Length: 237
Image 1 (spheres, one colour):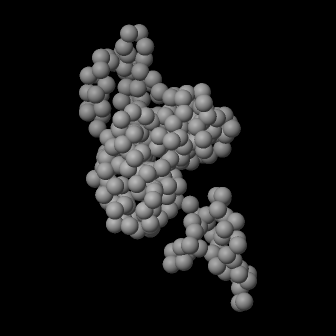
Image 2 (cartoon, rainbow, N blue to C red):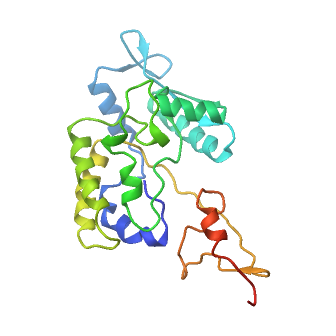
Image 3 (cartoon, helix red, strand yellow):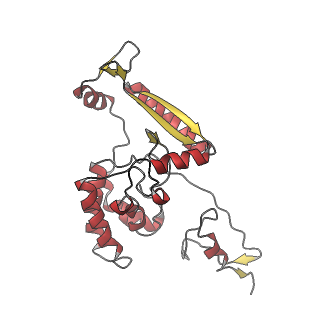
């Protein structure tokens, strides 16, 4: 859910006991499926009332990394007995399908946002953004349509975090309580972290964000890039 930036380490460590085990447990997984009345057919996939248990995963056609992640997930789920497919779609279609709730599953990055505090990412799944299927989810916030009593309590806790100053001691317990709900209801499934190489050249311009001078996120492909550009100075000036 949270990108492993250095500034996020204390918050990630605060809830590390909540994360899903990275080790697959096929026996336990199949037991959950079978407890709901599914039986494996001759093809090895679960079936009930004449319908195979299936999942269609949508990916953005322009992002090879996403497709490769999805390919691994497809093979894992098929091995567990779920008829899983991956569908690569045009970027605009992928975005609209998420926004309007037109999907079984998607590989995406929309839990990201937080850089040095947890509120930004957590706020994306609050009830203020809940929209019915076929109505656009603003900014793809809560496009998974999480709702119910747990979602309501979570939203109240996140709202309390949102009015606290950065680094306030009250953030950690509020975050922990909210994320227990988030993970217990499995709103999203965290899969992988991705490293990005963003080179800077200080020959002519200095003032780029660094680990010590981390005034902003050091990427040049997001909406805040103009804030970095406005902080640059001529080298030697």
